[in-house]
Image (cartoon, rainbow, N blue to C red; front, side, top):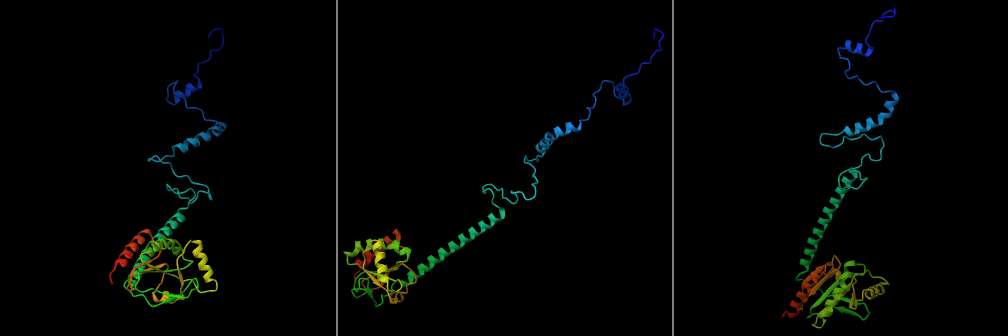
Length: 268
């Protein structure tokens, strides 16, 4: 070196020296410096969000999350179609009870239909007993007429099916009255001081104008009546040729009209 100064030996820069010691050529890609704590704090939420996005199963669904203890969603049934907030056990139990009630109700209806059919069959062909009941209007007693086609109807003011059936029965009687058909309508309410008033009000409220007789228990016992309403059709010989227990439907009314036509034209 000129100028009399001491020559200084050339030395490579420290990064280049470190690169040669590591067997890596100078200019190779350097490892990025470590992020500071502050930088980590700023990027932590983004890393957690990315991690949640990566928590995917092979089928495309997400992995179940672990809720905090006592969370409101614990135990909720998430099955499709179930209302939000329905507990799985409670819903399963309620479904079981509903099906149990359906089975019991169906069995009851079938049993009632069988029992009703048996009762109606047991009345067929029976001769009418000799009975005489007090008239509602107080004009003495009346017996079941002989030699005439007669409708005998057992009912009560508290009987809902009776309330529905009686207007239909009244219209039917008015249609056949001119052909000689009699109606023997029997109220089976419990005897009491207000019975006449109660029955009269019932007839007025339902616009019924039929002759009514008050049973003291003897008529229901004689005909073995076990349910209301019970409707019987007696032919001219006083035998039961048609019977119906329960509300008189349109279909059963047609059956009754056919039975009336046959009984009227019957030759003795």
